Image 1 (cartoon, rainbow, N blue to C red):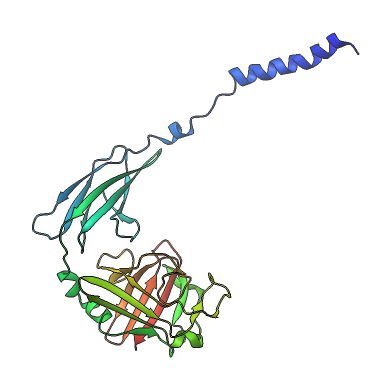
Image 2 (cartoon, rainbow, N blue to C red):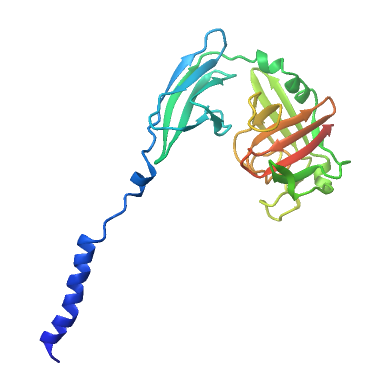
Length: 277
């Protein structure tokens, strides 16, 4: 084999390759092309004349869109560069601002220390009074006690059907006592398993529980008020185990009937009809 020829044939392409890599191929600055990333920051000011209410004002740089998390396990709230946050109970809340810029987003966090409880507005709220007046159960006489879909089309994925036997005796009781909000779910021996619990869509073991919950008149999307319970399905849930999140909106409520919708506007929503037990 002609070694000199081999070197000439293979080394020249390699030299050309490394020349192209070093001179013609440059790493693209995609972030720079998109624009400047946001730098999140905000101020907190107590609102005079309003109990447990704070004004959150963004001081972010290069931001054009904002979302707020009040630290109440209610998820992100769309809003402008300023928004008021109200807290029912005392405690320390880690409030977050998500500031979005053309080149990316940034998160800023500040703690708000609330020194007193303020239950009066909630206890005087008409929806809360109706919610806590008695126990609730899914409406077994309805042809569509549970429907599933999107916010724009709540029955798009599932238009309803009859309840399983183990669902008919389930009940939920909401209460306020000793400065605490509590929800009690009583399965009476068996719980219906949704699509996230095996065996799917069958009666399973009893998943009764007691849990704290929060009640807020701040609603994103349709509804009169928002109920939020900590923890995630299927450990905690209202109505069915496979809800998208433990964020529930009271769409309507009377002394005898209530329509709850689980899930935020961007999630799959379960709309459930309850009646007085």
